[in-house]
Length: 143
Image (cartoon, rainbow, N blue to C red; front, side, top):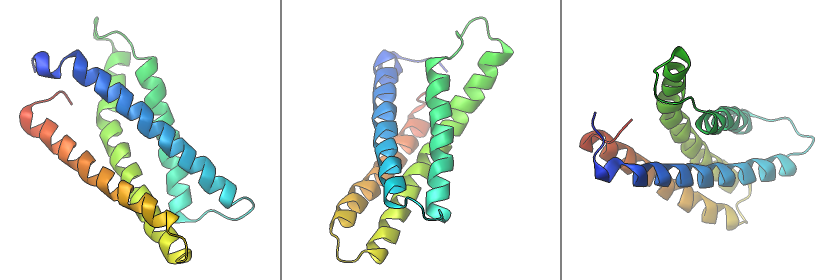
């Protein structure tokens, strides 16, 4: 696919900035969650969150250390498969896990409005992610 001016450097810069911001927010959430559960056994949501963050850290690292596009080596092809195919999947899983965590926390700590204030932005993020993903697929944005 040819990348026109709309999908050129601006898209890449936006992608890099938004993914970095999302990773930092998720990292803060992970540290907060682990500090709240210090000494307790992790269950589904927490375990899934840690696995998502491990893969997300690998994605961030692969984006930083990515091989040059030319010549198209086996390492570059492996990078493209990992970064471009696993990336959207893990981002969706991360947003979904945030929404699920908000619901779990709200049910466990019904007297705290803070969880609802985190749940709403997580749900909005999930919708925006889906819209952006579908927009990119429908308009031929790079994968």
